[in-house]
Image (cartoon, rainbow, N blue to C red; front, side):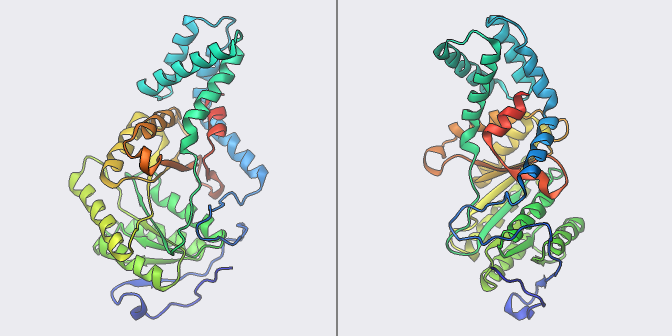
Length: 358
């Protein structure tokens, strides 16, 4: 089992200008398990009833979309009118034009091959089509064999970035991983304080510096993580709009600096996306990927007015992404449906398709 520091280490062991906070509160409801380097991190440590409760929340969050699509299949015939209604429903679900056309073409092929004559059977085939489109997004987050695994987390303000980091940290710490947080949003005091609260809740260390350079703070955190034998270092960066070119350049600088602190890092560049933003979410994914080469996504706030179809658009983009042939698809590691710890869960393509289609 991994151990945690119980007292503040000498500052000289890390970096003289960085204060390293060590907190002691242990999350009692998390079941600790040993995490082996190079193996998938199991974050589903909650009981199955909790996962079922979470699925009910996801289905409720996507209820409006599911109801709209389900109404398409209440008729008795499979004809052009059905496909036209389905096209409209998918577009209203934020699937976008390309993903909608892709799904309709795939569905018609499946209907022909299955010789389906019942609209209910067509709905089941659509669930299969959506599942297969989303399946490449379904991947496990893994630790690197050479510690620490460095994760750089980005996203626009209000997407739930810092909260998602806190939940992820708590899951990791509960799974036996030793985590160090880097508060690289240095010019927004509330961001540092929010991250410090999560550090306190999860019994992890945090590197924080008021009004410092974000790249310098991140560099010191990676060095500290290596020195302390941490399994994971997570850098919380400032919220950025992809249209703010100078600020996006700062994110590129942070990524380059992480690479200087540890060769091959960051191992994960995660974008937190608000699921309520529809096609704007796809635009964010494209812009941040162009700047930083994303490895994974965390989709939040699927419990509100989110329509969910944007994941189909993201999946189709990921499939056609130039790097897909060599680097693989961008993963959706987690999706969130609320504020509680258990409301952040690993992404399951079939589960999401069933919730989306009602």
